[in-house]
Amino acid sequence: MKTIVARHVSPENFKEFGKAVLVSDAYKPDAQSEIQTYYGQLAVMKCDSIQIGICVAKSRPFIVDELEQHAKTAELLAALKGDFITPVATSVVIGGKERPDMENIKAVRVNQGEGIVFNEGIWHWTPYAATDTCDVLVGFKTGTPQNDFISCKLEESIEIK
Image 1 (tube, rainbow, N blue to C red):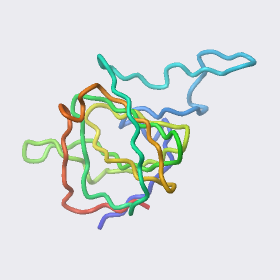
Image 2 (cartoon, helix red, strand yellow):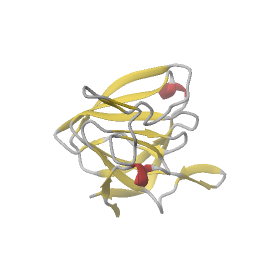
Image 3 (cartoon, helix red, strand yellow):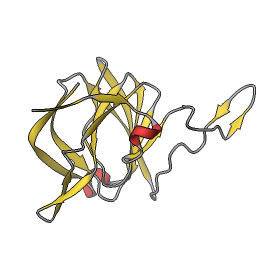
């Protein structure tokens, strides 16, 4: 079984997959006053309408047997309560089909109050709670689960540390 180490998400280590949605020195505020600091465009998702939901991720072994992809849709995951870890991979073409690039798969940790936006076509999986449970805000184009969901069972399981 292949093992990968989860790294805390940052604008630098997530740029090949999408955008890190968090306050860091990498981002400059759009407005600042004595009552607030506003970061207005940490990520942009293009779509007509967005469905918003919450995934309550439960504690489970950090073993990945399957990945999903939305070929035409970006996706937001934000940790509302608790922290989560998710595997991420770009695509390679194998036998004429897009598959996860298992040679370069990574895992990122997203702490409470932070988020990520996957670019279209990025492979990922249901968040793994890094705490007992984690409430994850999920946003993507309306109808994505029914119309733009591709699943891939992995030939070899991945363990996340």
